Image 1 (cartoon, helix red, strand yellow):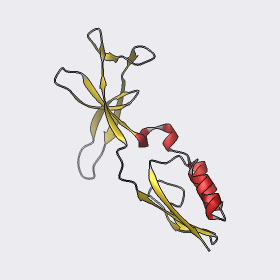
Image 2 (cartoon, one colour; image 1 turned 90 degrees about the vertical axis):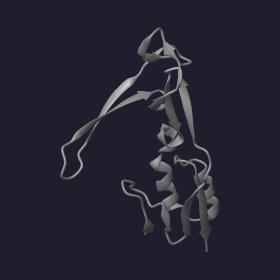
Image 3 (cartoon, one colour; image 1 turned 45 degrees about the vertical axis):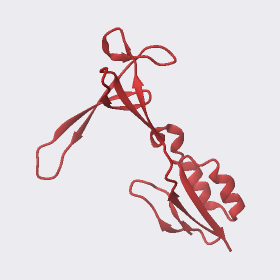
Length: 142
């Protein structure tokens, strides 16, 4: 039995208790993002340099449909390091690298394990395996 709260779209309890332990997360207020300069390849605006060689930007279209207005298409360029957010003075594209976009930052298995922990020691062991954006964990037991 678990009592607690979750975040919209998240199937696990982010602050709660299973009767043996209680846990919660707080923002860590650390810098978890960087702007990466995408070095272009030979005057092709869709190619940029990576450690593994040239790579093509992915183009993603998101359909935005606010209530009561016509839908709009938002075009996004995606790089290995994240979405393109701007260009610098030399015209190079800038990508935003944020830890929450990293696949290792999303691991629901660890959260499910936390919901089953019965001691703070077990919860702290699980915390080291959690795949979440950087947060502080507070946990206590009886």
